[in-house]
Structures are given as structure tokens and as C-alpha cells.
Image 1: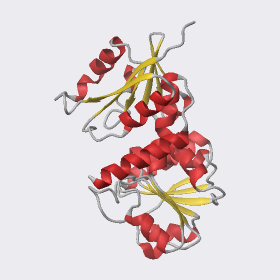
Image 2: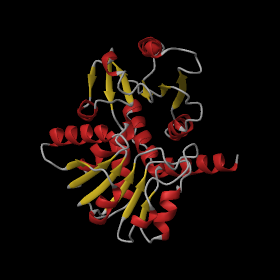
Image 3: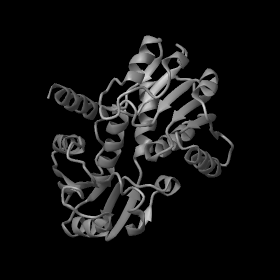
Image 4: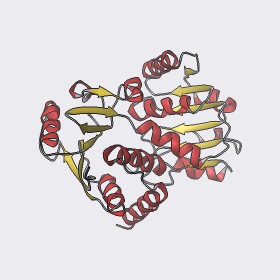
Length: 289
């Protein structure tokens, strides 16, 4: 049987022109000797309504794509258009990677894996008895799933929308069959008892500058993880380092979710270190521009 050496994949979302996924995927494809093309399918740039999602999937499938990534605002809306879901995508109720194969559309979620792999590799030996998660939105849902799969025994969830935090905690407890997730109202009550802090809010991004929690609450014994990666060192991480905390940058989550999507698309095992080095190059170029 002839081995495939040509792959076309995409990313469907809105306002995605600055995505690092195309260069990350295509350079890794080239390193494997593949003709690998990653195309942005930006509904905003195409002036398409959300209702065009099904047509976009039909288009990519008809063009022979191996699959496509899915990002905001389609990670949940895409599910009715799929043939089947991986176990984690079904649990999360969200999809960020679709594989087209044998006339089927299989939805996966590699976001949770990206965070999990980043934490395991970036904070080896970190104490995981208890943590505080900031943010119960789309990213927070994937991070919380990863946190409980990693074995965090008690996860406090803080969100500006208390109802959203309570819904996520209830979903997690039902999914994992134990009371391990709890909605909280104040970081000051949670952090003194926590081993670590995870920021899954947009606070700290260039477009949303600031710090999501008072630095006064941080202690040197805490580990602090951020999923924001532009900038790579957020105000939160800088403050945590000043306090002597172990820190985890958000870039790793992006790299590892992309690496797992790459593997799903073409069946090749990506070189995580090579992809990480390339990602850091891309971030450095962006910072200079």
C-alpha cells in the first residue's frame, strides 16, 4: 500500500489570520518529508455567517482535506455535523480537531491534552493536591478536565460568572464520579490552601492587559500556570517569579495541542522539542515586529 505523503488540513474559526498553527504544522510536516499544507478558513474574512459552518466542512471534505482544526466560536457548534467523537471530546462537549477518514468525520479535543502535557513536562514533581482555576469559559473547561485527569484532588473554580463556575464544577463531579471540583467566590479564600494557580482567563493578553489575581496572595510554595502565550511572560507569571514561585508559560499548551492534532491528521509522531523551538522562534519574530 502506498504511503500518503500529501496532506491538506485547515483551521476553521473567526479572526484567525494571526494563528501560529499554519507555520507550526507545515514546518513539522516538511521535517517528515511530507507535502503538508495548512490553510486558514476564516469565516470573518470570508464574510460568512455562523450558519455556514456545515458548508465549510463539506467544502474541505470535498477538496480532499485530511482534517481540520476548529476554534472559536465553533468548538461546540460543530458537533452536530460530525459522525463520532473521541471519548474526551464527548466528555468535554467541545471539538478542536476533526479527522476526515473513510467518509466519516471524527471529532477530537486536543486542548486538554495540550495543557496536561505542558504541566507534566514543565512542572515535574509539582504537588497536585489542590489548585485554584481562574476562568470557567471554553479554555477553562478543557483545563479543568486536564487538571482532574492529572489527579488534582481538589479544584476550586473562580469565574466572574458564579453560575458558570458552578455548572462546570457540577459537570466535572458527574463526569469523574467524585466531589473534587468546587465553585468559589474569592481567590483569597482558596489560595492559602492551594498548591497551585491556573489562569484560564484572557487577562494578561496584549489585548487584555493586567493580572487576574492580587500578587499579594502568591507564596513561594505555589506553582503558577498561565494559558496566555502572547506575551509569553504575562504580568501574572512575572509577579509569581518575583515571589519565587515555579511558573509555567502558556506556549506549551499551544504546542502540545498542535502536536497531537498533527499526529491525528497524518499518523506521524511529531518532534515536540522541534515544534517548541519553532514556536518560540515565531513568538520572538512577532515580538520584534
